[in-house]
Image (cartoon, rainbow, N blue to C red; front, side):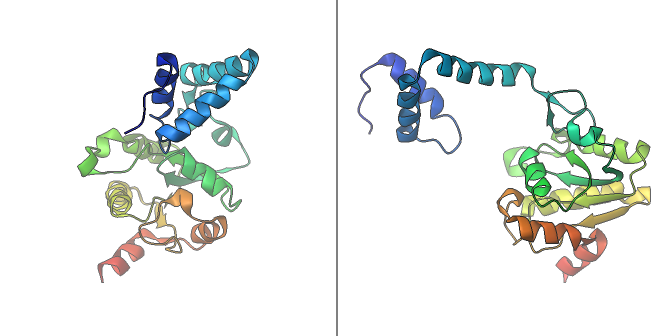
Length: 210
C-alpha cells in the first residue's frame, strides 16, 4: 500500500497521470514532480497542447486517421495510389507502415478490431465506410494489415466476406509478422517485407484451414 502524499493537490495530479496506459503511481509521481520543477510557461504549454489536442483534433473524413483538417495529409497527397487501400486497426499501425517506406497507397483506419469479449462488434468499427469507399472510390485492391491475432483474423475474414462481391483484389500481408503479434511492435524490415510479399486473402484463408 502506497503511503499518503503530503498534498491533496499533488495526489490528485498523480492519480490523473496514473490513469494513462503503462503509467503506475511511481512513474506518475515522478512526472508530476518534474512538472512542478518547471517554470510556469513550460507547464502552461504542456497543458495547452493537451487541451488543444482534445478540443481541435479531427478525424479524416476519408480514411478516419487523426488529422488537423477534414482530409488528412496522406489522403490529400496526389502522388499516392488511391486505388490501393491498406486496412489497419489504428493510427499507430499507419505510422508503423509509413516507417517502412514501402507502401504508397492510401489507408483505412478501422478504429479497432472485432472482439466480442470486449463488446466490440462490426458496427463499432469503420467497416461500413470502407464498403462505401470501395463502392465509389475506384479501389482496385484492399490490403488487410491487421494484427496476427485471433481478433485480427476474425476481422479480416468478416471484411473479406463483405468485400468479396465487389470484384476487387483482396490481399493480406505475408505472415512474416509472427502469430499473436500486434502490428505496431513488428520491426520495420519485417513489416515492409510482409506488405511487399502480400498474398490473396482467399489463398491465405485456405492455408490456415489446413
